Image 1 (cartoon, rainbow, N blue to C red):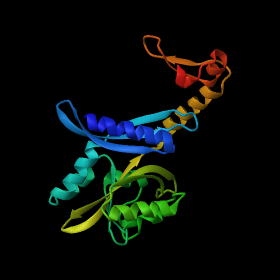
Image 2 (cartoon, rainbow, N blue to C red; image 1 turned 30 degrees about the horizontal axis):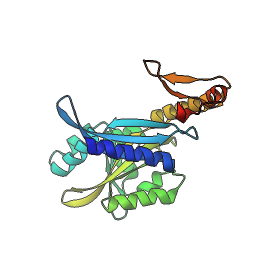
Image 3 (cartoon, one colour; image 1 turned 45 degrees about the vertical axis):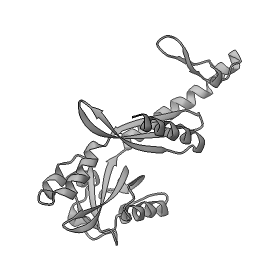
Length: 232
C-alpha cells in the first residue's frame, strides 16, 4: 500500500542517516493470499550503499497464532513448523519446551536444558543487549535480535531470534523463534567485500540499467570523469 511504501522510504532514509539496520513488517497479497513479510535495510560498511532483504514471515506469524488458538494440537503444531521455537517462563526466562527444529539446530533435547535460562546458552558480545531483548519481549514488545547461541557440541550458531508473549494452557509464556542466519550473514559479507573492492580499485566501474542509463559509478569513475556519483 501507499502508506507502507512511504514508511519503507522513511526507514530507508533513516538507515542512511543512522547507518544502522532498520526493519519493517508488512502485509501483502501473493497468489491471491495474504502474506506477511519482513523488510530489512542493512548499510554496507562505509560504501553508502544499502542492502534490502525481504523475507516471508507468514509461517512465523501463523505459528504464533496457532499456538495461541490451539492448545489441543499444541505438540503437533509445535513440532511441525520449520523454524526453531523455544518456550520460556516469562519471569525467570527458564526453558520450558523446544520443538524439533530447535533441537536439530542446537542439538539439545528438552531434558538437556529444561529449567535453565536462555541466556545460559548465549554467547552474545553484548549480554546487556541480549537481556534487554528478553525483558522487552516479556513486556509484550515484539522485537528481533541477532545473537550467537552455543550448541550442545560446543559450536557457535548465529541466529536471529524473535520474541512474543503468548498464552498457553491459560498461562503466559514467552515464545522465542530461532532462524539460522549464517548463510545470510555469509552472503552479506560477500556483498560488503565486493562493495569495498568496487570502491577501492583504480579502474572506473559503472552500473547501468537495461537501457544503459547510469545508475551509479565508483570513486575511480568520479576521478576520471569529474562527476560525483550522486550527480550521475
